[in-house]
Image 1 (tube, rainbow, N blue to C red):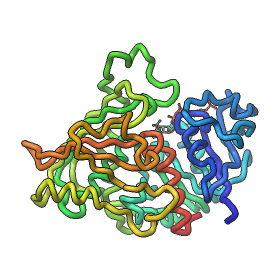
Image 2: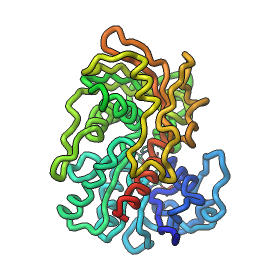
Image 3: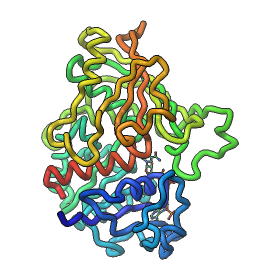
Amino acid sequence: MNKIPVAILGATGMVGQRFVQLLDQHPWFQVVALTGSDRTIGQPYIEACHWVLSTPMPDWARNMNMVATSVGAFDARVVFSALPSSLAREWEPCFAEIGMVVCSNASAYRMENDVPILIPEVNADHIELIASQRKNRGWKGAIITNSNCTSTGLTIVLKSLLDPFGVKAVFAVSLQALSGAGYPGVASLDILDNVMPYISEEEEKVEQEPRKMLGKLNQGQIDFAPFPISAHTNRVAVSEGHLVCCSIQLIKKTSLDQIVAELTQYQPPRICKDLPSTPKPVIKVFDQPDRPQPRLDRMIGNGMTTSVGRIRSDPIWDVKMTLLSHNTIRGAAGGSIYNAELAYQAGFI
Ligand SMILES: NC(=O)c1ccc[n+]([C@@H]2O[C@H](COP(=O)([O-])OP(=O)(O)OC[C@H]3O[C@@H](n4cnc5c(N)ncnc54)[C@H](OP(=O)(O)O)[C@@H]3O)[C@@H](O)[C@H]2O)c1
């Protein structure tokens, strides 16, 4: 096939670099533009970007000159946005208006009624919101968002239990990696030998975004899932991979064996079963008592799999467990690319 031309907005940051890495030799998409701020416009990517990933910068990216984040600066059909939220709010609609499909990591539009927060294995059907979005806003393109990186793994796990058992309430405590704060992120003297018990606006996102993704599409908007989530979010001295410890109250009583079986067997809907970024498996269940661990397990399924372990009875509610999701892959660039693949498969690109 002729590859679909795509641009990366904010290509030098933690998420931007992951896009460059993951789109290298993508079977459907070809990067034609990398955008940056006034600091980097006009520079070749190799000079503009302080590359921090463990694989080499792809050859095609090294000498690509950074361009402005503005309409007319490049031509693409898909725009992968790794912009800070305030810039995303300003620029993403401009690209959607002229026909580009914007797959965004920023929080700016996640909570708008006609904008989907997509995790293909969870709510592929929410992509239909694009039709209402185009009608409401007169856009030829669209904005599709992915969830905040802490919500991603939690939502996948909740979805696998929601359908068979129903969910009444969730309590979640995160231990989040440093790369989640962007580059250079948290000062080393603040985080070494330490845990930061506060991440700005994170708890609110984890308490709301999964409820939107697990909600039901109803006449051009989403009815949120009706259960509460209580979240505590913490920054820890781990480079990548967000760990979440959660307790879940179910509606229908069941056994731990059944819960393990549902998690292990969980399958994505047919439309996104065999896309280039489909995680295999969607959920990896550990029975060793000390897994998952960020350093050992974050790259399972090329960083797209959600790992779960320590599944045990909860003395207050029904079940508790620990889950792990790679924040810059599954929770950011990889998730966004998977969303774009779904949008293409569903005929929106
Ligand atoms: N890190 C994660 O795990 C994660 C996960 C999910 C979602 N997100 C979201 O993804 C977005 C990017 O996060 P990040 O961690 O990659 O941040 P980051 O490392 O701080 O990078 C920010 C990027 O924005 C660029 N930028 C600033 N002003 C710009 C402009 N006017 N035009 C174009 N680019 C501009 C910077 O480019 P220059 O180098 O050219 O100045 C830099 O590449 C944020 O909205 C964040 O909330 C992050």
